[in-house]
Length: 479
Image 1 (cartoon, rainbow, N blue to C red):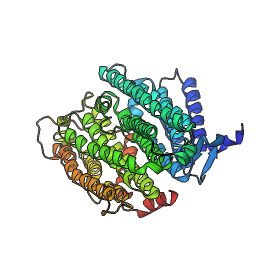
Image 2 (image 1 turned 90 degrees about the horizontal axis):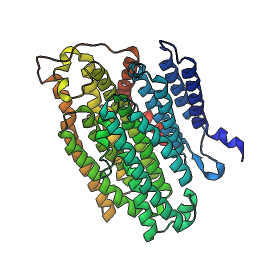
Image 3 (image 1 turned 120 degrees about the vertical axis):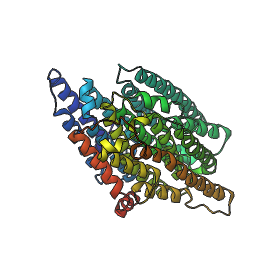
Image 4 (image 1 turned 45 degrees about the vertical axis):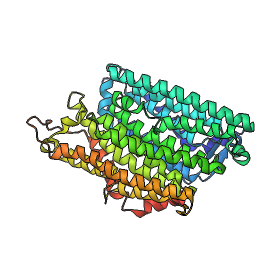
């Protein structure tokens, strides 16, 4: 073994070092009554990891091709690390009250390590190990609040669904191994042919990752898990976990199954249309805010994977990465506010609780409105630009004169119509805060400094990432 290969895994090595530091810090200070320094320590370490991911490491291969990395992968790792940093920022108050602050940070970093390994996999074995390293600790995070029955129920549904999806995925991988006698992506890509066994393996593999991304019809666990999990964990699930799985799926479709593009394009088009449409229709009916955001995330997953129906890798991966960057800041702004309100409202998260919210908490109402506008794609906020780029990536290289090209344009048109539908239910929250009157609005309350900083970062991203064209150009250059 060439031990210098470990130097090529600097983002992952940094996360391992962060885990060790957090473990030692938690062990040493376990009996301390107050540990106000613990959350800042975790946040600084995650911020350091984000910077490390942005280092110009370039394309590298390690351990005989089992580990592959590139600038595009490192950019996505930096986006996910930044999102985890925001999660840590807004979780201080909740985590300190839980009495298991150290465990929360360590488990979260463990899941991020698994996601990094999954995205850099060059072999199906490495990919599966990374996937399970991320999935199993995530179930622990969902069940973190042992005092709530919903938390245990959500974790049970998550782990059972994750186990089933992993089994389905392994079945598909075994078909590919039976067909080509190798687990290496590069070897399979050079031999790939559209046989019955290969097509079946592709479908099963796609189905397994579809569960992780919450694409329809693999989405049934999402609403119950999001509702039962602690709000901080729900935010992490909705953006970080989804982003890692979406990027991995896109990468493998292009680099492993690229010669079968006409097959998975049809599959992706059907799933994207179903995900966006069905999720939008169900979101309209929701009265519980975390379930509402669950169906919103399913719809957003459809928009994210819309980039995969294009035929140009650079445009698709750039659009997906840029969309995830905007989605991280917008969605985390919403979940940060939900967490603040929940902690000051007896753990209630009904939409009706936000009636008249503007009267008592005008600043939080305004920030929630900006985040909802961005998620809905209303200009001039960053969400509009992210949707524009995935629409463009979806029809990149497609000719409307061909059957597949016409379908691609049709899917983008349906997604555009669904954007109008999504505005209705996103504005439903705004209506509750500003228009619907109540005699008993939520009381006025103040947020801690960490929460304020997290919201400042998110709102700055919502306002600036769209109008600063250099962000998109930088991601495009990295791709």
